[in-house]
Image 1 (cartoon, one colour):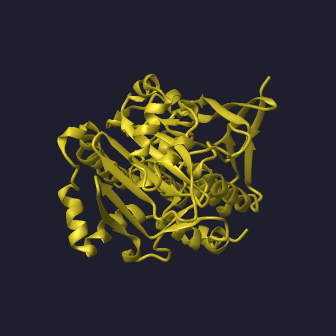
Image 2 (spheres, helix red, strand yellow):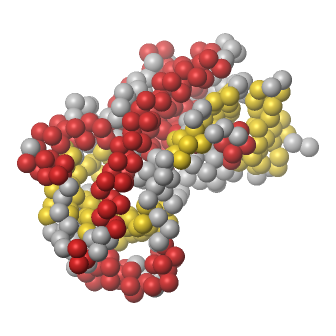
Image 3 (spheres, one colour):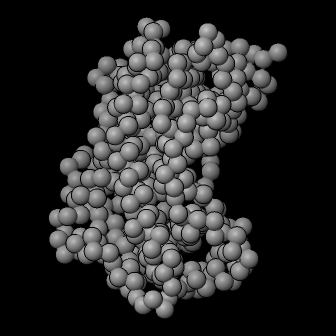
Length: 412
């Protein structure tokens, strides 16, 4: 027999979207349960970028000062190298924001911080090692979640189920809602390289014929994304680690010998890139947010921030109906309507960069001659004030959300 629980809202997934929504709802007085399938948040190569829009949300909640006491690196500018030519193209200092920078912070630190703040509210509960496996329906609408936990089977009855369980969402598959695939011509291999005191501190990307990689400064090491054509990892494995090290060495901005720090192909973590979205994010009693509603490309590193923005919009719209036990399909539709344009605009930008910048660079051959910056990057180089445009798009996004006053003012 499954144990039974009752709450007002059950959230599947303890990532940025799920925990932020859980925090905001609990702060508003809603009884909420978050299910997280892992025993902790310690996983390498998750998104670690906290953008100005998210930092503004943290300020509105009174958490910014404490958050920024955690270890992090501030990124004020971004540049890209095409062949031997370096082009600055983003300057966050031109963005009108309380924090005109990206904070690079391990996602587990950010999630633990959200959890510690949420646990101050009596209505919040996080259940670790608990995975949502199915939907419970009653009278034609979703009425809860079936889950497995470390203590056995569990049934959670609630007014609203929120699927925030990522791009591989089990609940999304169970819902049978339609997914629109926008396509992604790339995958990424993530790994670490040691960082030395003489290295630059600048986050950077390098485009070369047939190759592209990005380095993120993580303090004592570099977090590296080696971007490859979709499905080409099998060929890399066939060629072996020595071939990979040779290609990597030619791209490094420091001594080539450091490529040998990649000991084996087991050090490479494959990210299969997806860009897709649900055409409808909800049905009665059920809502999807974050990657479960719209899987984002790593272009711009905006996935966490879109997820947080979804959570803020959902809390603003749904907290009062949840407190009044009257969540309607109209209100669920209002969440999608609020976040639909920002999602479409951001994904359109990502697809444009994938198809017009990244894919052509990866398709090129060395004998095609040196790779030159695309014309738009040459404009950023010639007219520095234009760098504010991608900074605004990446840093704040399209129509950033703000916490509703009734949630902002609640102090627990």
